[in-house]
Image (cartoon, helix red, strand yellow):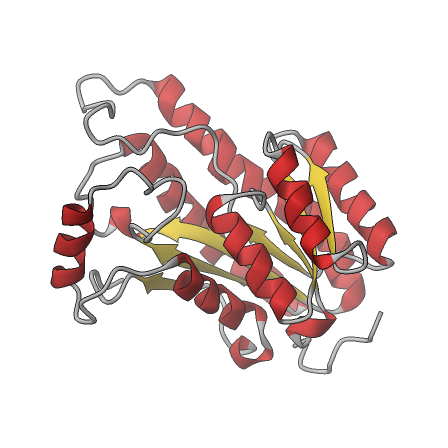
Length: 263
């Protein structure tokens, strides 16, 4: 593998990138964005085996690898990183924490303040925060050896603008932002940057496929750009944090929602 630059900024084409939850939805778009830039991509999935393998087959074995692992399982995550390093001949240098535990984005069916349980909060915290912790810790030895690391966490604009109070999901994403900032301070001396990219409703992913056009239109009219962010536009921002252009940026949360909310 090519040695890291003195400023610890590798071109995307020289990176080995892990996308958690990469088999479908936004994750699949992120996989495509990195692969199109020449990166070697590890497509992590939990249950979307067919979709993940089809995505890997599109780019070929020298560019993409689909690997099953539940990110909440520490041992499974360790195996995931070992498998990736063996396949590509080097450590994962960029991690995009995109995976979610099972969750229904249904505002009518959400748990209200009176109904919310600790079990619901715990499920989201384990999946979002615990999963990210597992992947970060598994990535550190390889990133330190490479002298380069990029950790990019996928957040949400709901904790700035809780138009639908998904208490459990939003609380876990807010905790992930805190982890982003504390990890950035801890890992900066190792040449490892940790950032977050937060979107709102994207047009269109699996999670937003049932959203009525009227809702999309209302959101578009509320943004300065008069548009709803697409998965492709969101992926562009993730690419920025992985690229040398962001080499002096860490501990940040970039909201990518057409200017709807301000961080």
